[in-house]
Length: 559
Ligand code: NOJ
Image (cartoon, rainbow, N blue to C red; front, side, top):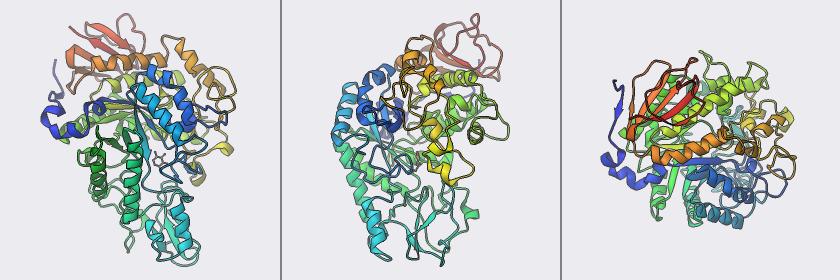
């Protein structure tokens, strides 16, 4: 037996400073992402809400997660699913009140579940009082300086040809010859982080929620806050590729963004225990660790896993990269298969592998074709997604689970265009948008919204949702829900610490060892493979006469 890579030291021993910031809990936490408008609707208005979350506490407890991350629940016109925030320190009345928020946090804490909320510092909504004041106050005003207003080139001509990430121009007219910059939808004007009033307001926001008992923060677009909008502007063609290894892009991942997080770090650390933070930073892999460093946010999403195809070499590369981050940069790593921005994992893995396009792109193109082509194999996708989550949960580091993935839910591809909520669908001809993974959860096989609420849900649920309902899966010991529960229950005992080593195996198999003789073995091939002698602890599919069938993972304890 030969070890292809050996990671034997723990971060605690090598880098005590990292541990002070990101405590053991966060280094290994399993975090469940709740997209509140689509989780549970307590008042029958078709939209999920905070009391709905509180009412599902037994479910969250039975899942065995350490924390939840709540996507935005702030007042919003929903121009971008709540990421267009009218007031960063309040609850959208459709989702509840601040009292409901406090009751939810109390219930979560009583269930021993920590709470992470989303902070959206790159932009406000265009209904935010600051933006309304900026439009009214006019050119050169202090009010406009909180945002990024620039003079246009005359007539209908914006200041430059830069594009929004949602498609179309990144500039919208103020109506008086000036234009405001927006990386995302026009309803999301970007803030000017050179402005002290902006900085002070977000310090206040962080303290506001930390004082209410929030344990951590997910920082939206963490790599986008600092910008260089000085002239001459480079043409869009020169900067359209936003991922750079050196911090030189005018809009993304600039070195000085970390000054903001060093400032917040002082606030996080003024609490006992220190507040946790994780950055959403789509940056060059060599730059991710800056966000995850002890001086900055402490953790950064590693999106590589959700970009990976179902191939052993892809997984091996992503795992090596994530573990190297942990060791080289004294941080923790995070693994995830999906979130509210990505076609669901069971669907990505159920579509044919394509040598020219990553699975995410195949899934987006399939969505654009309303799921008609290519052919989706739902059972293969769910089988692979089950195998995949067992890999993630066996790794050192923290894992994020997107609501509904624990049910093996598929992407909803055939939502009629007229019900789509995502601005991406409106602004782009190349994307159908992200609504297909945001369809409200099915809790039971019957009812107008499959137990989500008393009435139909804000996005229509397909009939096939009934078969994935929580109540159906609870009754089936082999369901994906019960696999998640079983894996999460075993994880703390089976996978302590950071020790990890690869075990050499045939090319279609991924095999690694964790402490105490525990092995995680995945067969990516089509034919069953022999397993080492040992005690089977959990498997994502039934073994075939003691062999591991294709597209499945087993946890074993070897003597
Ligand atoms: C990232 C969020 O995950 C996404 O949903 C949102 O559209 C953008 N940030 C803009 O806030």
